Structure formats: C-alpha cells, structure tokens
Image (cartoon, one colour):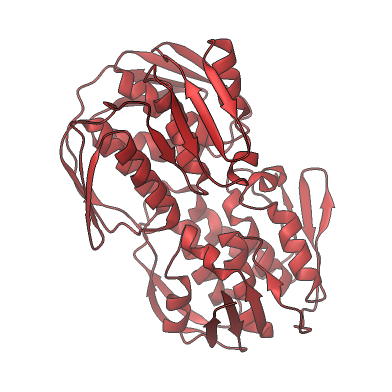
Length: 402
C-alpha cells in the first residue's frame, strides 16, 4: 500500500493508541494467573494478535469483543507439541521461548524470515548449557526443554525481552528463583513494566539490587483492567508540535513506567539546539528522533547499535530514505549523527523497509515535504489506525493499493 502526502499542518485532539508493551505483558500475566481476567482498551496490532495466537496455542481460552479481551487459563500450558505463530513480533518470540522450554515437549515457534535473523543467542546459550533442543532455521525455531526454577545469569545489553521472557517462565514454575543481570543493563524500564504487570496478578517479583531480580513462589489471582496509552507511538503524534502543528495527545498516563515517555524531554532538546542523546534505553524512539533532528538543526545519538536488530536496520533504513530527500546520516562506532539538512521531495517513492517505525517517521517528514512512501501496511504491526489518526488531525494523506 502506498501513502501519498501533501504538505500540511496538523491540528486537533487524538487519543494515544493502547500500549503494545503493556498489552503483551498483561495478556501473558492473565494466562499465568490461572483465573478469568478481562482486559479492555486492547489494540489488535499484528504483534498483539501474535501473542494472542500463541496463548491460544498453549491452551488459553481467549475471547475478544471490540477492544476487550477475556482470558480464561484453565488449559494454559496443557497442550501437546504446540506450534506458536509469532508473525513478525520479536516481543512475542522472546517472551514465549522460555515458556515453551517449561513444557518438556517439542514446541515449534514460527515467523517471518526477518524475525529469525534477530538475535536469539541468549536462549541458544541457555539451551546449550542445559542440553535442551534448540534448532533454528530461516522461518522457525524448534525447542524441547525442561526448564526448572533456580538462578540464571543473563546479559543486560542485548534486549530486555530476554529478561522478561525468563521472568514469565520462572513465575509459571512457581518456586523461588533469581535472575542476575550481567551489566551493562539497557532498557531496564521495560523490565519494570513486566514486574508491574505481574504484580497486578499477585506475582511476587522484585529487584533486590540494581542487577538482581528475585522471583518468589506466590499465589496468583485474577486481575481486570485497562491498557494504558502508548508513549512509543504517541511520540509519532506529539512530534508534530515541534514542527509547526498544534496536536493534543490524550490517554497518556503521566505516572507511567514506560521508558519511552522520555521522548518529550528529547524532543525539547532537539528543538532548542543540537544535542547528543543516548538512546540505548529507548531504541524504538530512534526513527522519530532522527526525523525531528533532520527537520530541525541536527543531533548526535549514541547507543545506536541495537537499531541494527529491529524490524529493519533502522539507522541504515533512515539513511537510505533521507538520502532520497537530499539528506542522510553519519555513522560512527555505536553512534549516528543527523546533520543539519534541507529536505526536498525529488519524486522518488520512499520505502518502508517493512518497518512500522520507519513508515511513521518518514510520514512525519512527508507532511513537510510532500511525497509518497510505499509498504505502509507495516504500521499494522503496532499502530493499525496511524493513518486514520493523521487524517483526523487534518493531514492531507491518501492511501492507494500498490
């Protein structure tokens, strides 16, 4: 699908979409609780649908009605050799691998080729050390293990999703366990989201020091609640306020534990000068920060290596698309500089790189330059209503089959 923009100034009020990060965690927490749970304000992005499918494959009974999900988990983890379809969701894959390793049965996790190009080394090492089966090919991962409660050490600088995945499994196993994080510890805020979600269901999980998480045997219970708004995707709406528009983004919890709420501070810094910003704790903000910097006076970003292992190599992808507009990025060791640049649409259709955040970042720029970007269905991964919301805010954008 192709999106074509005319230059436009946005104005209006829009609700931030539900948090994908929180929805993953509450859906899995509901299944782990063993009781009936109702979650509202759920957005059925491709990633969330992947996690729902995997929970069903593991035996959970899940019913959906509009934006409400009811989870009943009497049959959860009572399944024979399930196949878990993860689509393109890195969160889903990494959250469910440790649970699969608890079954002592053969489990297959499927997904896109790009998904299985993303790092899984932490789990591969875990399987090797415990003589578990770990067989990966271009579209699937086959596992068989008998994970037990205990003490595990895990690197903290690859992805916090590995830590979250192990927490889910150790909570399920129901005995005292400890996770020791090998520093440096990046994206700790996402682990705090996991712990907060699980505590809602009665799980006893806490940091005992900066690098140690204690999981205690506990009686879990039902929880019903509402998924809060998503700061990661709200950033692609709020950014318009820094390029001449007037947009109010509602449904954001000011007390949220979401680490990407830092975007407000970073947007201000970029609008006021040419800052140096460390994004090692918030790599999902990389594309929108690059976009704003390209439209303002530039900036330098450190901690950018993790951008290589997302839905695309996001630094390279943004560089390729900015070059089509007369700009580009400068790459250094674990850092990327966005120089001051004059962007003009020159007629070449931009490419989404099949990455939802590249689509949204370049869409921000195209509201200023005009032009087209192809492959925009990628936004369904996290924010299916993105273009509807832009139109609500008076963006002049048209969608065409390509």
